[in-house]
Image (tube, rainbow, N blue to C red; front, side, top):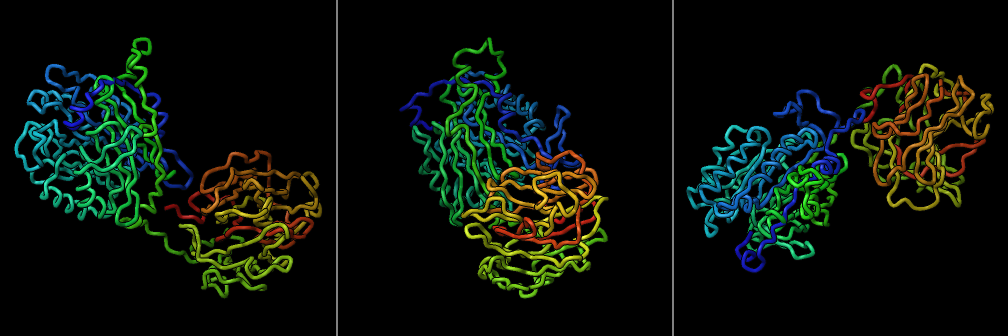
Length: 632
């Protein structure tokens, strides 16, 4: 805390105590396993075993960064009471595996006066996490002579919390020659992150050292921690202090890898977003609770990273208050168990791949040749790059009627382009847009719709193998699709693919209509995927329904039948509404197959509105590792 605040606004001692149970639910950082997708449960070699025998999962897409600040009133001469911090450390160690806590950082003002006695007591308290949880500590103005910078020389703080304390510990990278600035490498989310812990007043020499660290770790996303950087008004709107402006100008704004800064010192807590020289967001957060009951009661803030959701969920609570039985809690305990204002409990939406692309781009998997995708079980495989599609090469170019898309499986299921209802050239265009991990780096953009009906389809001839094959032993139909953003116009129950036949002609009458096709994939007006099949064996029409598909992003869809039932997956995740009723094969009768629409009574109405990438049909149920998409 600043001396000015001590003079103008005496600290209100606010005591808080816990939130362990709620925090675990809120952070939600346990690993979730998705078939074939990133963020799956860590392999044994990817788990760090904690003192309690449970593991921290380094490769999980969900992990947490714990933040402490301004514990000075817990170490204030003979008024000291380390019990809240002891309970906080017990929580961090005990719950490390459950919450997947990767690292803890303390933002300075560990003690009130920086005396030998206070520092010694604090140092003993920190032993509870030594060797059990990687952490950093930095100098606040109350830990040393506040009028000095990092060239101050020897202090009680440096002897207790200097680089010798961390030498040989996990993640410690080194310290500046003066010992007051350090850096740590946090391994979490299957990558390394840089944590800078800077003196409350870094000298020119200290700032030069910081730049050498950043230069040596140029590809690591960076969290910069220091005691003072920004202050906030009563509404929680943060702005840089005079010293914070110096750090911004000299270090932060020019190093794009710094995406989050954390500081204490001032209260109330607050946050803001600044724009760096690369025109990217830098989140500036103040977390200081010494003015609260019981000097903050060891309150911590958890930054729960979710790399799958591109989000950081932030919660603030006191494990000490929570550890008290409910019947023993005072009114102030209960009021401050968990802080839920907009600056204490919130979520950040960060597209991590985009935000880090300037310094750590994720390499896209290269295009794969058809030979890497086609196997002896492939019935048909279509892609829309130059290897299979004549005329491809100009992004946005219309695809002419009659254009041929070859079946690269070698079975002769070639597709022919046909515009519906005399539509103009714009209803079907070639595009370089594609999903990362898709074999071919190309797609087709369809501009179908209703009122009037318009669109385009790609259709095989009658009698080709895909129109009469028996797949009673199982099958897999895969495709890549994307819905436009904005999603405009009337597109209710548009087709994505179908066989151009009638279920009634196949002897199937136990369904919606004998005039609908024997197999189709459609999208409802609410953007639910609908897969309808009339099996070869059963007289039924089991139908799968997905969740609402968001617009503006690519999806990999896999329809997998194991000769017993059909399961639809979206991006490797099984959708909920998959019927369990028996479904064996598809009742094919030699009629054409079409992409870009679904027929009814062998007639197309509206066409598909969106983009389609590679499409493959296999004669058995494929395993997740055999699907076309490569997850990155």
